[in-house]
Image 1 (cartoon, rainbow, N blue to C red):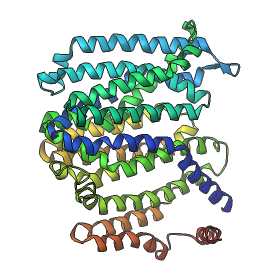
Image 2: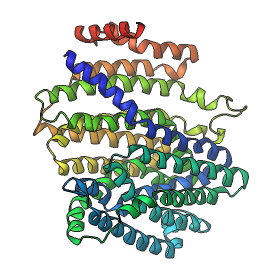
Image 3: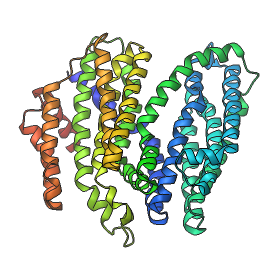
Length: 483
């Protein structure tokens, strides 16, 4: 047990290391959310959210799964296979340019189909151009990852994101270009990032191999199907909400959805460390016990993070802390009730990543795809049923149900080949104690909320949640910190 606890402490350290560039990038992107809430109308924010939802979904299709396939088949005899890179890169580039050209030519009818006013057809054209450029970056980024050039990968990513933030501020805040300035900034930043990646492209580009391309497509295209399901869960609510309740409602929802960034970052950082951690221990007899214990500890930490966000997001957002202005413009405050629900949805997304481990260890990619589409279909069905009646809250609950369905699906599918004995009693204590602290929070002030948050770990200690070995390890850790 002591060995396992030390390994889990190592996982926590790896989570922080691997997630650093992701955290910085997403935080830089998050800086645009307050800016847009103060400078753009809710309806303009809704148009932006809907357009970017389509961009995110189509990016999965544009890549054809070849970036992931290149990581799997991009080397021959331990060395980079330039013919594989040439085949993947030129295929993605050619198909992306063709698809984007067709979208640009049909921008007006596509805008109407997406629920955008006719005068916003330019957003579709900008989006098509961004899609083509971003698709061209997938393979060079994959090459950097495959060759373990993490510094270059993270550096280029962060420079591109920072450039987008700066240009968006200049175009929207200083030059007053409004919604078009948002997309123009993104396009220029994407083109600049592709230019930074050009040395990687030129160093690996060679005559394409048809044989390698067929091999990579056979591996990558099925991943597109799974990726489409995952993206539906994440972004389908914006265009559905825009169509059913209007662009303003979608803009308010999308802006407040992003306020769940704390849990999103926690889950993203954890996932980057968790996958290599558990795959390296695939052959161990105690892999199942390790998965179960990680789920318990992740649940304990993420439930505390959920409480912190749910208890304090409203006073944080509405207080005039930033040069006398609130973080988010008051025209968006009606969407704040969705934040705890979205945060809880991301918590279930983290549980899904952990429960996915048995399927990953047994290489059951078909089951992973099935679980993803269980969430996607749940999301689409509940969005269609709940949004007309409950608006943005219906969209938030549909997202939570979708992530919960994905977690339940991988748990059920994983039991058939590698049953894991999860610590359900301890998880029930976590769920009950978290709910008991969250329930009265809306009717009490800030001092009482702080006490509720502080009561969370105290209640776990008093309830017997931690075993004797865990308490001993915790005391040892605290003693080492004091020393």
